[in-house]
Length: 240
Image 1 (cartoon, rainbow, N blue to C red):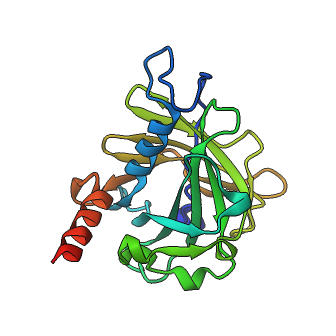
Image 2: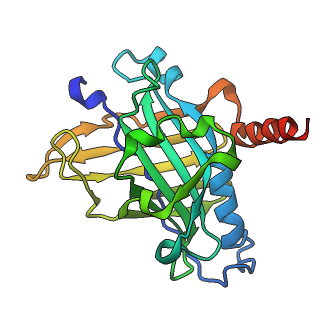
């Protein structure tokens, strides 16, 4: 695949199709939007990689995505009701100290209360945050000025036990490896996450990203909930 081995930014995405108050259970028995925010956060929190896919397909890259919750001080204008902020970095599994994608995420009910919005923020000094998820949650405190600006939002929708979605038809702006826009379709499921990250140039040609099959991220060691277990270990350490 050459340069197309590069995986684009993960942007959790989907469209949800009901309207309801944030804290009320919808008529179709789906969890409330507030509960869905927590489900998405719990699903992303921890580490996943594509090592199994890379072993089966020599053209597939072995990439790890690591995500953790953070606290944003003085969030102000970027705050949303029931929002959870997260940090995420993406790197080749053999180069974890050299991530090629870093971003902050704001997971929150959308303004119209019809979906879960994941807004992507690009930090102005990404090098400062490498390995942030290795720190205890109590130390993952970020000033709002360090979050950067958001130029992309995508929307998550719950379908049975999964979350499925995609970016808008026009995609999101990009300046990575010749792409001026990216599109993505993802599925969060019990084994992990599948993504169709793709980058397109100014003439609409795909210049990198998934072809033929999705990128297949799986829980490292088959261990869903790694983030929760990490926090439990931190709490036990604090209690000693």
